[in-house]
Image (cartoon, rainbow, N blue to C red; front, side, top):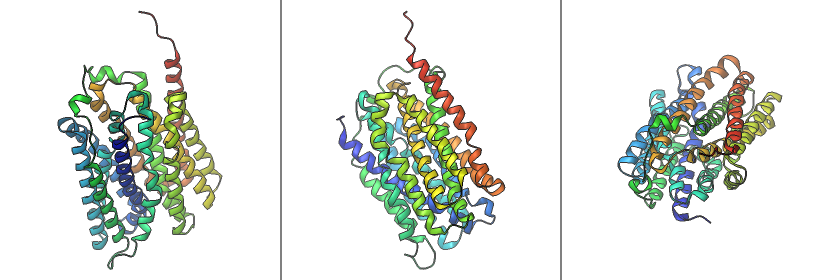
Length: 393
């Protein structure tokens, strides 16, 4: 068992609180956005802005953590999440689409800071257990599979004067809980974690392994979020009842995080590129199932495959990334990685509502196939390169 278990446990619990808030917004954001928006094609805008908020926060989060420390950055992020939830609750009371979108922007900022939890876990253990530490922190999201959607349903009628206002107030309580957990985390000072000599960023970024890791993580995340964002709209559009959305999203999130309990061990045994390849095959499997029909079981099966594929692609990509930089380079490389991933994810989310509204569910799923093919090919190439014996000096 690796060291730093207390820190990793706290990071996993903080991850659970953050992702419960994000999953709840994913489940409700497009539906409530469609109610509040002046144009139905803008229904997914709150989700898209939330993802944009994640990308925007990635670079400032890294700068703040470099100047101060990880914990300070994490506390700022959780505070932004609490404020964002309260703004969403107020927006629903006032029926303000603009305020609802603003609240989701802050929730995205929260995720932008919290995405560094998995890298903090690497710093809390030794290099031999890095992939397992990442997996355990990501596994904290399994709680979100049940807590996030259920909070949305439980809080639906809590407050007089607006549906789901109570849901977003409960979401604010999740961020408050995260603040309490984060305050107990004790990590190495940034100066210690970043000891050693750093190469120029351009030299680091030309490494094929690093490029494959960023591309794979970005494509896996973008495909997952684009399809997940459109799924509630597609299910309602196909005549399925609104009550059927919650279990599909729940089991999708189970698919996202349940494999984390063994993904790290698989990476250690077979290597990150091979696990990423399995992830892309599962994501292509999602497309196949989605094209077979529009019944409840089609959506449920497809979304479980979508979640599992994301897990292998994302955790595998993160593990491969940590092998491509030195300790002194970690924060700047992590910042580039997060910005690249969530920049593509933001683009995918913005296109989700438009693609579904204009072309439908089938076209939306077919649109991701070329991206998955390119990412799969890149991991096959990098796996072969890593297996080649090094040339003698």
